[in-house]
Every structure is written in structure tokens, then in C-alpha cells.
Image 1 (cartoon, rainbow, N blue to C red):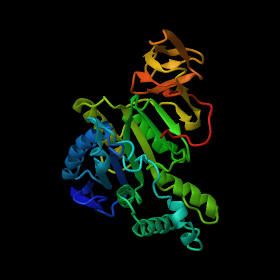
Image 2 (tube, rainbow, N blue to C red):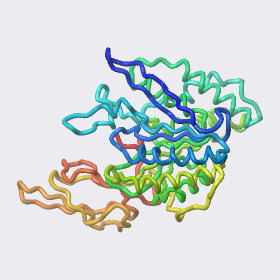
Image 3 (cartoon, rainbow, N blue to C red):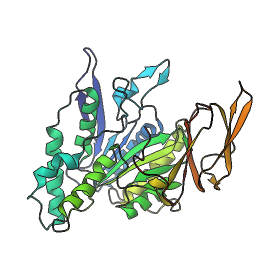
Image 4 (tube, helix red, strand yellow):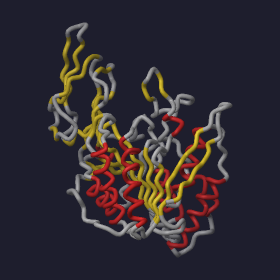
Length: 371
């Protein structure tokens, strides 16, 4: 194991944040898998899972079972991890700019498109190599006017050339699910079965340029730009993994989740070992088919359903009670499908998001990711 560090240029005197990664295997070995946790720094399942995964990878490396390269960044956001307000972590948005730490990553297709004109040819393997070199050059030349931009650049310098990019998150209250592009159905199935996902949500471009799509969407856009005469495969499989809810943090669960990731690493040829799927293949639904449920009034939320329940259209899934006025309003499922997440708080304002239900049919357009 090699330890990599990257200092982030401070925005204020006397303060310094540092990123740390653990790398396994030769720096040029393939396939390369990059995993990170804690980008939303108030979500701790991922960092704990990667802590347990590191121990498993050390054992695999010592036993000569490492075939490719693995890079772990167990705490990908030291900036957000240090941002607390009134004894509560605030790691989703940067308190300085209020930018979501998982949005606004560099648009590599836009940065490199003109530079790649005339350089790609009929060989898809060579085209991928040329494109990744262009990504590296663009990232190397990026300006970093603030610490948040420096963080985004540093993470992508470690990950831009990976064959598999896994960004570990969690929701408020949720079942295990993942977000990915439809370009890699086999890898999506392998990953879902390895980690026990109850749902796979698919979109080529979701909006907001989150970390995972900053790796997969450039190949989608550049392939369309240059056309079939210069074939450019979707060379990076990238996914956001949602490991249940914010309070689902335990060593036993994290160790089991790390073992599931080892199965995936074996299935994609990074390590030698058992690669049989641990779980059934869940539904793969379009992200556009995830319907949001909102509060009809402010008050106290009481749930009649839990994450993981299948609900019928029109079924009452919760009530919102206004104790000041004595009113109680039922909230019905807008579609039939899987209720896969609920909001953390048991109080709400009128119009606030309460939950999401996923089904097979598109029900929305535009930017598909929440703030």
C-alpha cells in the first residue's frame, strides 16, 4: 500500500486541509478502480466501509491477489468535515459558497473537446488513451480560485483515468441503491448484486455534474461530438452508491459492505477471489421515473410506510399534522413503485420534500438531482 497526500491551498491564513489516499497495486496496472467516501461530509457509512475495505485490500495485496490498481480516498472532503454549526455537521454544502460538494465538477468534455479535434482516429483503444491524456492536461492547467475548486480538481486528478469510479454516499433514511449511467449494464448489475442494492437508477446525464457523472458523461458527450468515424467507448463506469441512511453506521454492517465491494472488485478483475453475486439483481429504473413526494402543509410527519416498501398509486404513505391548528392531512403516493428514501426530519414545511418513489416510467425532466 502506498499513501498519497495532497495539500489544498487554504482560503484563510493558518488553516490547511489535506487529502489522503491509499493506493494498492502498480501505478500503471489495469483495471484501475477508484473509491471515495465522505464527499458529503455528514454521511459516514462510506468512510467506515472504506476503512474496513482497506484492511481487506492489505490482506489481498500481501497474498499476491491484487491484479489491478485500487485507489481509496476514505475521507474525500476534509473541508466539509470541519464545518459544524451548533454541534451539527454541515458537510453537504460548503458554508462559504453554499455550493453542494457533489456538484459542479469540471466539465471535461467542454474543456477538452476543441483540443481533441483532429487527434482521434479509428482505433478506440488509442482514442481512450488520447482522451484521458487530454483530461489530465486540462485538470493540470485548471485554475483553483478557492478551496472548494481545489478539492474538486485534486480528487479528479486521482480518479480521471480510472476504469471504475465508485463514490460512496448515504441518504437520510433509505435502502441501499445506486445511481449510474445506462452505458454499462453489466457492471451496474454486478455492482448492484455485490452490494445488495434494492434499486438501480439510470441516467446518462442527470444535471449538476456530480462527481460520478464528471467521469462518465464526458465520454457520452465526446462520442456524440466526434461520431462513429472516431469511436470513443464509454471507458469509465462510474456510480454513486447510497448506503442506507445517515444513522446506519456500525462496524458489523460496514464490514459486510466492504466484503460486498471485494466481490465486485473480483468480478471486474482487479483482485483474484470469489466473484459470485451475493444478492439478486434489483430493478433498474430510469432516474426520470423517481417521483418526489412533498408536504401539503407544515407540521409533524408520521409515516405509514418505510423505505423498501412497494406502494400503490394513491396509497397513503404518511400524514402531516399541524398541532397548532389541529389539522391532519394524508399524503398519497403519486405513482406505484418502490419507496426508496425518506427525509431525515420528522418536522416539515409546506412544499418540502418528504420522500421519493421510483417506478419504471418517466415522470419528470430537467435537473434530476436534488440540491
